[in-house]
Image (tube, rainbow, N blue to C red; front, top):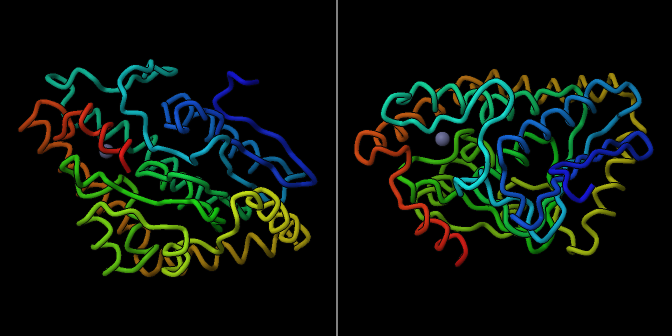
Length: 275
Ligand code: ZN
């Protein structure tokens, strides 16, 4: 079990999906993303499950997408694009459409309440795991950041920023690559509540249990009403539009650098370690 990237269990009608790559700060490999998706879909399909919790083992919720290059990026029948000279933007676009924005959208539309429990660092792609959940409980040590502008791109693939914290704070967040504390994130409406780190799992399960007592169809309708309201406001099409803007960043970097981001990876890792 210690070797599994993602753990799954059901406790009193609550499915608990646990990121289990603690030694790498839960940096997301393609295999890990596919397993998270499989677990969330399993929970979505299980009639016994009323509420889904996404949590993480270790100090940090997630350091984002694993860009170390050291992991095997081959999964199933499609391969991570790495022959940049010939694969160009198309392969990146297809890859990210499926695993980044595609998964995040799919999870956001699961017809059951979902709760993320976040502790420690939640960096860039980490936001793509917690944002699509309906509720976010943050430990008091949680820190949220998107330093993707430092890579020459205007933010992570799934542009939740403006919706999560409002336009002005979103711009400050992106322009400065700053870190929002848990308290700031609650103040801006991005997280539902902040609890002491030691209470994170208990508080999350209590909330999940409370919600699980409600009528499942009514919960699905309530979720649909909120999501549909956002979609009518343009959420869904804005996401696709911002995703395409994100791809022009990769395209620009490919032309300038021959690699889809503009920074040196070692430099990037060093700056992330300092934050
Ligand atoms: Zn990207």
